[in-house]
Length: 167
Image (cartoon, rainbow, N blue to C red; front, side):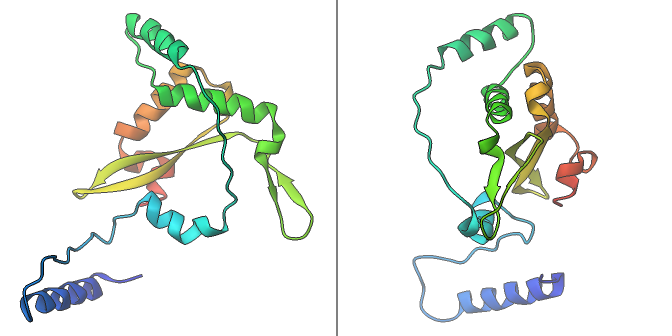
């Protein structure tokens, strides 16, 4: 990992290169050393990940109806909370969705359902994508899931263990 002095030297070299030579129709920009995003992580780790594609048409009218019912009672439930609930229930019911191959011919099946999602937060003026987790999400109500997502979106980063761990 680069330290602050190395970053400053690289920025100075880049700046010096920009001022000499012919004018270009493009320019370099500096990205904060704290800037991380999903694409960076996919590039680093995604090549080894198993992928699958699921094609299903989903009628989302019921989602709007349920959200409207919650809004009438003054509560906000996002589509994300509903998707987390549905996926969590499906994963609990279908252990194959929690099963992964190990080297050789063995597999591992995780017993716990943990909902994973991303949340973008501003840190020192830069957008950073964090990975959030809600354990046992199949057992939580839609309101509990909505509140957990809200805390990830707006709560203090250092008070949320999963976000603090990624700083």
